[in-house]
Amino acid sequence: MRSTDNFTMPDNLKHLIDKLTDTRQLTKDEWIRLITGRTPDLAEYLFTLARIEQQRHYGHGVYIRGLIEFTNYCKNDCLYCGIRRSNSHARRYRLSEEDILSCCQTGYELGFRTFVLQGGEDAYYTDEKMVSLITHIKGLYPDCAVTLSIGEKSFDSYRRFFDAGADRYLLRHETHNPEHYSRLHPPSLTASARQECLWNLKEIGYQVGTGFMVGSPCQTPEHLAEDMLFIKELNPQMVGIGPFISHHDTPFASWESGSLELTLFMLGLLRLMLPKVLLPATTALGTIHPEGRELGILAGANVVMPNLSPAGVRKDYLLYDNKICTGDEAAECRKHLEERMESIGYHVVTARGDSLNL
Ligand code: SAH
Image (cartoon, rainbow, N blue to C red; front, side, top):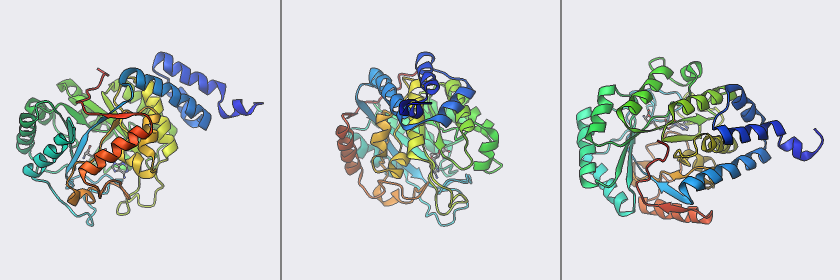
C-alpha cells in the first residue's frame, strides 16, 4: 500500500461496509475480516453511513426507557456479573410492588413511556407476583410499554406475562458460540437454552431485545461474527450491546474491560445490518468513557435507558465496577441526559418508541 489513505482505510474493507449497506448482511468470513482489520478512518466512514440510516428512520430523536432494577437477588452464577449468587459481598435488596409503582409514577411525570423491569433471577418474584405487577402498571399507565428483563423462564411463564400486558422482553444472548458461552457461565446455563428463550419470546409476540457484551473474557472476532449472524437471523426489535466491565468480586476481576472503540464499531455495524432496529447507548458504554453514550448515539444508537430505581438501592445493583448514575435522582439523570443529547444535536423523545424493525 502506498498512500496513508489506503493504509488507514483499506479498500477491501471499505467495500465490505458498502456491501453491508447494500445487502444488509455479510458472511462470517467477511465479518471477521472487517472487525479484525478496522481502522479509525474506516470507523468514521461506518459511523457516517450508520447516522444516515439512524436519521432516515428515527430522525434526531433519542428514545428514553426508565430502568427499574427491582431485585438484585439471583439464583445464577454468571462469572462476569457482580450480582452473581456466590458474591457474598453483594448487599441484596428487593423492591416491593408499591416501591416499583412509585418509581413508575416518578418516571411517568418525567415523561417516560416505557418502564423496564430488570432484575436477577429471583424466585421471590413468582409468576403470580409478576403478573400482578404487570397488570397494575398497565392499568395505571395504559399508554406505556412494559419491558421485562428477568432472564430465562418457561414458555408458559413468558406467555402469562405477555397475556398480563408485558410488551417487550430484553434477554441478551451474551455470546452465540457455545464454547465461549460456557466460559462465561456455570454449567447449568447453556447458549442453546438462552437462544431457545429468545425464539419463544418472538413466537409469543413480544418485541424482543437481544445483545452481547463487547470484549468479554476470551472473546474473539470470530465470536463477534457469530453474534452478528445470529442477530441477523433472529431479527430482533432491539439490540443492547455494551463493553464488558470487570467487577472486583467476580472470577473475572482482573480481566481488562472491553473497549470504547470496538463497542462503537459494533454499534455502527448493527445499525447498517438492521437499519430500523432500536439500539441503546448503554450505561456500560457511559461508564467506560465520560462521553460514551453521546459517542454511541453518533455511531448509530438511538435509545438511552436512564435509571429510575430509588437512589437508595442504586449502588447495590452493581453488575460491574464504577457504574455511573448511582448517586443521582431520577429527575437529575433525566435532565442531564437531555442536555447531553442536545450537546450533540439530538433530542430526547417522550413517546413509547416502538421499534420500526418488525
Ligand atoms: N437477569 C437478567 C438481567 C441481566 S443484567 C438476564 O439474565 O437477562 C443485564 C445485562 O447486563 C446482562 O445481560 C449482561 O450482558 C450485562 N452485564 C452483566 N455483567 C456485566 C459486566 N460485568 N459488564 C458489562 N455488562 C454486564
